[in-house]
Structures are given as C-alpha cells and as structure tokens.
Image (cartoon, rainbow, N blue to C red; front, side):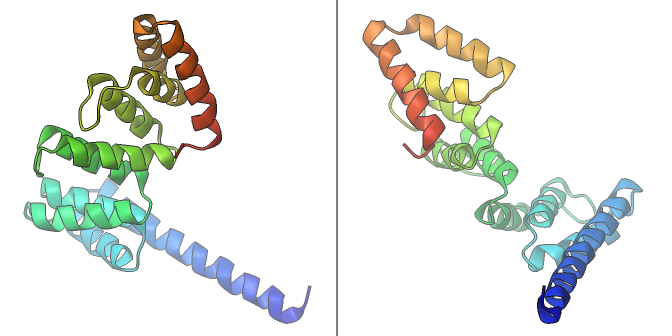
Length: 190
C-alpha cells in the first residue's frame, strides 16, 4: 500500500472515531441528566448531518428535554433525520401522520413514510405498511400485499398477522401473495 493511501486511511479512521466519540459524549451527557449540554452536543452533530443526532434532537424538542417543547424544531429535525436515511425517523413521521400527533392526520403521508422505511429494510416500517394495505388506509386494500409485507417484517406479530390475512385469501389471492413475497424479497420496491 502506498504511503499516501495509508495516511489517507488513517485520517479517515480518525475522523470516523472522532465523530463516534462526539456522539458518545452527547449520549453520556443525556444519560447522566445533563440535557442542555446533550442538546448542544447533539445539535452540533445534527447540523453536520448525523442522522442519529438529528433524530435525537427532534425528540428532545418534541418532548421538551433540555429545551422548551418546540414542535416546529422537532419536526424540522425529524424530517432531516428521515431524509438522511434514518428509518426510525421515517417510522416516527409515518406514525405521527397516522395518528395526527404533532402533524396533520393524513394516511397517505403515513403510508408514504412507512413505505420508505420498509423499502430501506426497517421491520416496523414493513409491519406498519402491511397494516395499511390490510386496512386500506392511505392506499386501496390489498390483502396479498399485506400478507407479503407482514411476512417480510420477520417479527412474531408479523407472522401472526400474515396467518390471519392468509386465511382471508382465496386460492388465487394466496398464489398472488406468495409470488409477491418472492418479488419483494428480491426487490422491495417491486
């Protein structure tokens, strides 16, 4: 390995470790109850694009931890985290729109966020997406698709729900559900 390449790898590793230690410092401050300090440290990381910090800052603003309750700031940071690939934030936004908590009750928006989380591999996102297909909320009812997403959620609740839905399907729908499961395993956007 060339000397320049070796030095580049060392610098990258140091930057990654520095980012981790800053995040750990923020987590430690939170865990010992220094919420104002934790918010300041997390906000710095959030502004640098750390989706974990963005999510935690969002929760702190939404719950008034280390600051006053500020749904606008909480929403801003939650959206930033979700748009940066944080699937927990995607599910959170979906849930807030599903229930109308700190967001307009909107099943179509909820469906969109659950779908994004599901496609990104989040088990809860998969389960919530399946529920929406089963109930026909935010999307037309689609029991074969609900079955497939429940199965993909790989949870005990998902397996139970998949069986419940499967019993409601006729033979053609069961075949369709099994094909969909294979397609979605290979390509979640299918």
